[in-house]
Image (cartoon, rainbow, N blue to C red):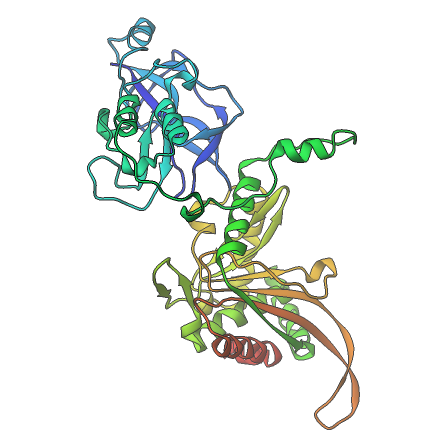
Length: 431
């Protein structure tokens, strides 16, 4: 029986992707491990390998097709003794990876399968990954009837929910739940139609959202709606750091290494998290995870979005090693060549807009991180010295955004004081 090739989940957070480019054509013979396509996720372009041997019988989506949900069929693979005629023969019947109600409704896009994420379940009716598998027709019927797919037992292959399963639930007596007591999805603002109507007499360009921008939008809405932010601000004296940086760069010039102020900031944050281990933590839904290593994420602006590559074990790395690794991650971020494990995880983030002349700002926490440090521009200011004299000093304003579920006020203040201490006495970072 022909085997369907499904859109893969190339990262734990991937829900849909773009088929950037097919690397095979119909009629090509492939073996397990051969490259089939290039897939664009929300963060990177990755190569997708075949897991089976066979012949490419049919490509179901074109190059550049966007918004393809994970586990949607994208191609059909034929065994040695099969031909394209077998594809047509089995089009209306159940196939590997397909729902039984294929063809029940013309609106079921090519009879594909849809899915929804939910908390992991031990039920045999749903996959261990926490996804609920259902045909598009069954999904639409459930939505129209106000049914939760998680409450429906699937009778299709591997527990998939099909039309008859939804119909059987519709026939059951329903318990009334007031609309205002049901949990709502994240509020995303006015509908597209409503906004378009506001500007129907104005000239504008409509820009399609790519996977990265959709992910950023969703995560930021989640962060601001679900994370109780509070903010701590300090001014930091940088003259000692700037002098040390200049001296070290002179010594490192022959090795082609040039340290940035941001390298010192990341190192300071990593060491501060070790000094205040209770703040080196993330929110995990119903518990807090306290990390032992300092895994610090660095915000990197790219065309159309943002990456946050993670420097793992940053507290153990020298400034020169940190600088080299950060430059490599930033370069690959701009090329969208980062691997998921390079931008996922971490407990703390650094976002530096000082190079753009921004004096100070409040950054949004990157869930599930416990905090993020927003760094402003450094500049000369008049300050009063310890002996009461008015002097000119190089200062930098920073703001620590903190998740109050993870870090309380006093603990956050202690963390920020440690960061300030390392940056104002940078020789301590070399000890």
